Length: 346
Image 1: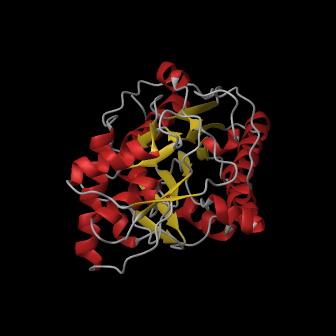
Image 2: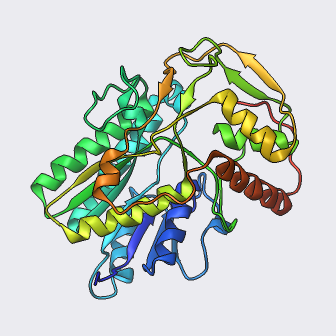
Image 3: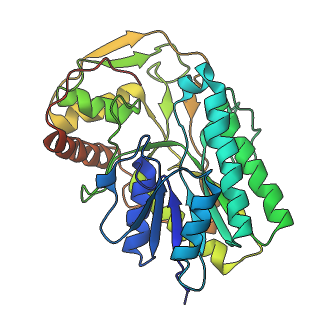
C-alpha cells in the first residue's frame, strides 16, 4: 500500500497540469497547486485543492508551501509543468525560455532538495530530439534540439540527472509528443487564446472561432506530403504521470526517462479530415510554406513506458481525441461567449 503524501503540482492551472491534478485527485492523492496564472486559469483547479499564486523561483513561497502543506510527513513529490512552450517564440526570445524553463526549474529543484522532497516528475518534450534521423524515435536516440525550447528542457533533464546522483531524490522525465484532447468529463481542457496546437486550432475553426486552418508544408516525405505527428490524449498522458509517481516510490533507487506517445502518427490532413467527420463540416485549409526545422515525421517508440509502467491508454483513438477537444471548446465558448475569428496557426 502506497503512502499517498501530498503532491505539489507546478503550473497546475494550465492545460496539462490541470489534467494531472484531476488524475491525482481521482486516484486519491492530496494535491497542492502553485501557478502564477500567466497562462493558467483558476476555473481549471477543482474544489479541495490548495492553491498558491506565485512563481516556482520564489524560494520563500516554496518554503512556506512545504511547511504549511507537509502534513507532518512532508511533501511527497513534485510534478513540474510550469514553463513556456511556444517553439517559435523560443527562437525569437531565447532568454525567456532559459529563464522560465531552465533557471526557474533550477530554483525549484534546489528548494525540493532543501525540503527533502524525494520524488520529482518533469514535463519534458520530444523537442529534445530535434529532427531525428529515424522515426519512431527512442529515448536513447541522439538529443539535438533545434530551438531554445527543446534545449531548455534538455538542460533541466540534465540537472535532474546530476541532482539525483548527488542527493536522495529520484525523478522521471516524460518526453511528450503532440498532446491533444480534453478531460472526457469536460472538467478542463486547452483554454489558452491563440493556442497553436493543431487539433485545438481545428476545432476552433469548426466552431467558427477561426476562419481557416493553416497547413504548413505539403512537400514532406510522407504519403500525403504533410507532416506526421504522434497525438496523445491529455488524460492518458496525465495518467502516465500518476503511474510514474508510483514507480518512483516503489523503487527510490531508480530514475526514469520515457517517451509519452502512442507509437503511431497522423498527417496534418488526416487530422483535419477527422475533424471534418466528427463535426460534419468542411474546414477551410490554407496551404502555406513549411516551417524551418519541422521534421517529416515525429513518432514515439513507446516500448519503454509500456514495459516500465502498467500504462494502458484509454483514449488512443483520433476521433475520440477530437470529440473531447470539441466538447471542451463548446463548453469554453459557453463560459466566455463567442470570440472573434483569429488567424490560424498550427
